[in-house]
Length: 86
Figure: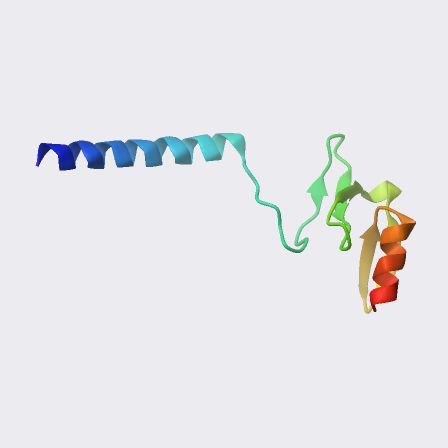
């Protein structure tokens, strides 16, 4: 019975530590699609390139209107690849 209690205590201690570390570091998983804008280091809005999946500052992004949505691209090559796939 004693080993089971020790195992439970270790389990809950690790779970508590993991939760508090994740909350403190503010870890974020990479999204499949961009649902909300991401702020860059200087506070500038970052946008997701749908082709290469990289984040770029909105001020330097190339934009294309696509069916009511605005898509943002890091390079002309990514923009051209996107337009060719439509």
